[in-house]
Length: 144
Image 1: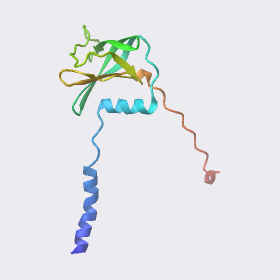
Image 2: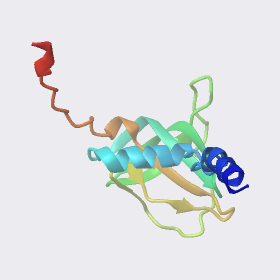
Image 3: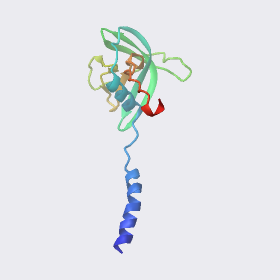
Image 4: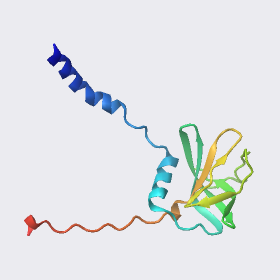
């Protein structure tokens, strides 16, 4: 009897372990992880196209392409991009709980909290640093 129970337990362990895998990262978390690993070059003043605007609520995230205007290292204006490549006619309008300046640190803006409890960040993918160079592997002595 003990052998049967032990066998069932051994067979069930891989099934139980696979059911407890970590949830998939959302688009914001993927960008944040990459920027944390590689770092980013400074974001200069001016217009920046190809940014990613992330809007998060709870565990869900929406990532929308867009363009922003940066002045004195702070984001002044945000436009979201439509699927046809055009931009909104007016800047994105959200009401924020705190009227703070939107600074940029390591290629990602400071989080902005809306009155609808959305968290918004602007990500600058063109400013991410390239991956670090890896050393090549020597020829295996068995292949000489």
